[in-house]
Amino acid sequence: EAGVAQSPRYKIIEKRQSVAFWCNPISGHATLYWYQQILGQGPKLLIQFQNNGVVDDSQLPKDRFSAERLKGVDSTLKIQPAKLEDSAVYLCASSPWAATGNTIYFGEGSWLTVV
Amino acid sequence: DQQVKQNSPSLSVQEGRISILNCDYTNSMFDYFLWYKKYPAEGPTFLISISSIKDKNEDGRFTVFLNKSAKHLSLHIVPSQPGDSAVYFCAASLDSNYQLIWGAGTKLIIKP
Image (cartoon, rainbow over all chains, first blue to last red):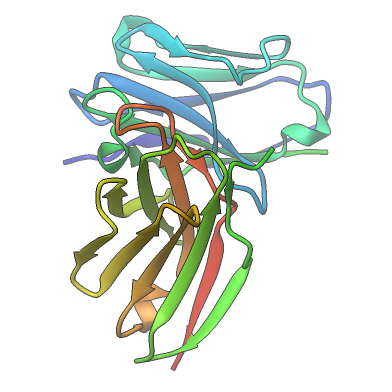
């Protein structure tokens, strides 16, 4: 079974530029998550989708971050404009249903450095 | 406001000995706890969980202990193996269907 796929793996951009990350969840998984993990901290949930609807985006900085999951499969996370403090690993995860911790599968992450 | 705390950034243990990783939480409403393991350049993977109705859960070499009165849980790995070298995250939620709140992680190094 293929895992959660993310791209790009690494990205370096200048502040105020934009960046987009893509995620393809495990086939058949209804729930998709985007997490932000800053070095030395645990993952922080940015947004959770159930199919193509948003379940929780309370911690998404909506002035600069946006995410969509068209057709309830792939998802894109965009940052525009980027700030230095956005440097982090962006982890996409999926699960067959809502937030049951032991069934959440993570991708390898997209590493963002903002200079 | 860190609701889940892992106060040891790193831990070094001799191969074959017991590794004990600790986690403290502040929200007494949490009743579902998990440990995840993360290798470099990979996403976290689920290791073991425990519900608040239990005080111990065991899976092979891994045992999680929960002390609700102290708001403390620990992960014991016996015996420790080189492949156990990784970052271990503790996470908690209000129940098994709620958002996970994560600790900052503890880097475990197993020395040969």
